[in-house]
Image (cartoon, rainbow, N blue to C red; front, side, top):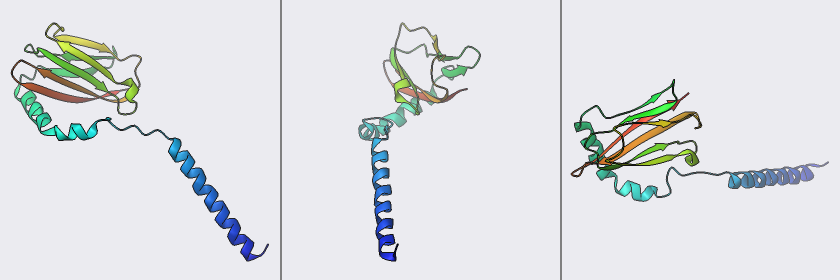
Length: 143
């Protein structure tokens, strides 16, 4: 084999490698954190105000994971009129849980996590008391 054929062979192998990589990369799924991330960014100042409001409140409101019972325990504020609890799994958004909360929801609530994916979760609690909106977030690790 002479050097001319070797150069052509190297170019053909390189083009085949690039083509293979393009096909493999185009088949990989890439989930955005949210589909509407741009709109979420536009409303971020309101989010900062909600977090600030929650910090001023009674610290009895909490979200925690209990390893023994594999449950997320949630203590809601007494003033809650409506709200939402989102258990967000960054690794797989199909695992996300979104629970609406109303004034009739028990003050202490437990959510089972037995059949859920292990790893990092974010518990996001947003609520309204009739006057102001509040938001708190906590990272949970499911072993």
